Image (cartoon, rainbow, N blue to C red; front, top):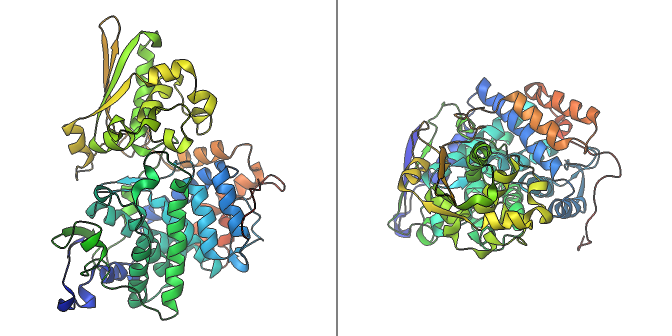
Length: 499
């Protein structure tokens, strides 16, 4: 890996294209290095994972709305839409919009956390949509996805957007554009312009994940994917983009991030080095914010020692800065304690999540968030006894560069009315690569079967799983077979819009 130092230059310096970070990203994307076997296997896992959560969410209102919008933009030679028979195609940017929203809605696919936060599986929908439209092969798709993950994960390692309250899609969109560039075998100068355009148009604020969280949380990564497809389309036609987008005097770094004196260090593979960043990411077993995964598993373990939940006086979760200030009581969001809050808000409330996991001993992507479940009197009572506190050691471990130290959990104290105390901790979720039960291919398949049960036919399930596991051998023009369709007449239709 090569660590690149990124800083702001005044316009009079006229920074050479070859010295710009966007050019270096494009160089990685244009590098025709082979994809390792284990990386190919993990890409297949994540395609299965995305399909699992997309189909589970297929008739939820945000997904229905996004799908209806896409179906209003038909394109005979375009891309498929989750849930819809593969013979019906739409323009690729709209397929990216619909499929990206479906993948993101349940907050249950993969994650990578470092200097910033990300769901790198969000790279897959736009890359796949373009691959289907331009009739690429399984090997082409694998190469494109490997690049999307590589660029996204490494941007997240080096540049923190959250401290400036910028939403994490500002790292996602350039990665998606780079992945599409690799997929299509574009030249470095074309990918360079697409990366710059993608970053320029995808800078938004984190209000989408603050306060009363709306369905835009699911749409935001899909919007990035749509913008990435449009960026690549535009520059393929010979158009340019704002430059230098990272280092310029009026660039994103200069005015949105750390300012004119900033220095960021971002690693990227050296020429000829394999793209392995997907192996650093991890999926979710439970449908909730990633920082809650280990704490859900910990709640399952601790509940076995509690005979009477009414005997609990208070619960204190000692955890990282991020968990405390984003999904804990440090956020100072009253909505996180409100039983009438939206599902999107509840899955960003570790107080709610820990209370339900402690009481139920299971986590369900629908039932655990149901209004009736959230409003249960004994749950609200327990929920309001929970607080979080930042612990410097858990913050250090959250930000650790050593993967053996990196952790996203916490230590929990449960104080009982009789003066006794239960205490336990968990660093990583059971499904994490370093957890008690790391996810493998069989787990991804089981997750797919559980989440799609009763929604798609057994025949369709078996067909998809057989096809995706043979991805590397899928010939050009056959990627529509990666779509998963519902039985006729079972897709919801939403309210009418413009188209």
